[in-house]
Amino acid sequence: MQLNSREGTNELRRRLLICGVGVAGLFAGIGLRLYRLQVGQGETWRSLSENNRIRLQRLAATRGLIYDRNGDPLVDNRPSFDVVVVPEDTEDLAATIQRVARFLRVPDLNVKQLVQAARGRPPYESLVIRRDVDYDAVVALETHQLELPGVSLDAGPLRTYPYGPVGSHLFGYVGEISESELGQNPGYRMGDLIGKAGAEKSWETRLRGVPGGQQIEVDALGRKLRVLSRVPQTQGNNMILSVDRRLQLFIEQRMAEHQGSVVVMKPDTGEILAMVSKPTFDPNVFARGIRRDEWRQLTGDRLKPLNNRAIHGQYPPGSTFKIVTAAAALEEGQVTPFTRIFCGGSYRFANRTFRCWKRGGHGSVDLHRALVESCDVYFYQVGVKLGVDAIADYSHRFGLGEPTGIALDHEKPGLIPSTGWKRARFGEPWFQGETLSVAIGQGYVLATPLQMASVIATVANGGTRYRPHFVRRIENAAGDVVEEILPEVVGTAGLRKSTLLQLREALRDVVNAPRGTGKKAKLPNIDVGGKTGTSQVFKMGKQTKTHNLARHLRDHAWFVAFAPVDAPEIAIAVLIEHAGGGGGAVAAPVAHDVADFYFALTRGRSYQVASAGTPERGA
Image (cartoon, rainbow, N blue to C red):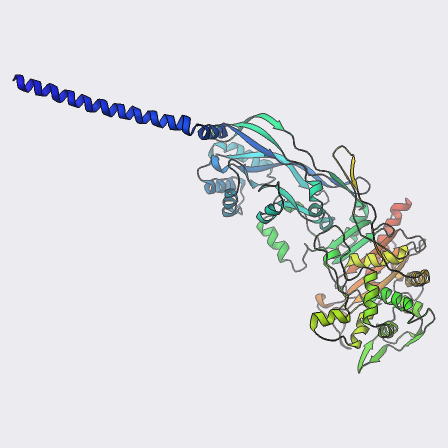
């Protein structure tokens, strides 16, 4: 019995020893783990702990405002509520976004795209789910806050365009920065807004401003409790444009039924007073985040409302180009003001008949009358005398065939053909018969409305070519001038005074003479000079009538003008796409109303649209 008792005691001791070793090992493991957490990984976990409670929140800078020449705001900012989520505060980001969509009653949220965007963001940086939500959405989200961990509402400035589509192609719009843009613009982050088009893009660095930040305390759901510290943002600079809001708005309304462009500029400075492109679009939809259906509608529209026709539209200038041909002919001595050519309604050249717009012809005409009545036959024969290369030379002197250099993206250069151009482009020689079409602004010749406004401005001011510009100065938020944009001379037409005088007198009679093709632009008390143009889209046969053609095959109507003739204040280019009538019938009345309204503004009289008469066919 004593042996058994001794054996039992030893067994008990052995078991106690094993238990002691086990307990000691357990505490040693716990101690080692605590050491690693507190010493080895202390900084990491301390940082994560702080991020769960205290975070740095970036504050987007308020963009500078855009004003017209009289100080009227054209582009502004307004308060907005954006729905944002911090991905780290929610276990299932996709499910959370879907719940937000349900509460907002927005079925078209692109969950996959938002989840993908969240992966490229720094930790604990918020992701915008929906911009500019209404009051009902704010109430819904606040009511269901506990069901939406990590979701909150951010109040901030939203870009707004008070006049909607008015001036949208010139002012442009903003949107969330893309990945490709992010690589090209240091200092931006995903989610930032950036200028995407127009002045908003070209002048982004002046308008943007400097972002600020704040240190905030949040609860377990990521909701903001209080602001601990704040670094204020710096507002972007303001831009004062040369554009006159009243004139821009008037032309937008006047062009409501048309598709095309109107450009109004100052001949002696190159300042843009108005730039209209129709059809247009509302830039506000981009500022608050364009929906998929809205984007599809804009990009799928066959009329291409996103295109700025003033600088992107390239059209044969038609008879407005006769200004260039006439200048070249006088300068090169191929004609004098007294040279007469007979027009019987057509001209036979190289076994082909080239017709004049006036079927019965104009009879014997000199240069003055050829411009006033826009005789095609006269300019066919002048073109043959000059040759295409001489015409190209003078075209370039007027700035055609190259961008004007206006501070807007993707300006088109137009096209001025030459023998070298055709050889390089097609590997073929130039045929003399092609010169006839070029001489009247057809064939390969292409120009934008802004280029043609510059051409008529060059004639009006005495031969100096200014770079078109629409910004007068940049000011900071305090109103101090940061940068002033002065008129810039970029070239000269190199024309004699006698040539310019001959051109201006002929262009005056285009509008004011009884047989002038542009008499629908005539004003009662101010001399207007101008030139009509009809740009052929579809070659019609003898039996084809314009009204029988589909709209997209009908002629474009042009009119370029300046006024007053003796002391020009404005230059105007009007292009009406597929008007189905001559420039004198369709485009000249628009120029008439634009000039009339401008002089009503500058002469301090009330405006009333005067009758421009009944439509009349003309070149």
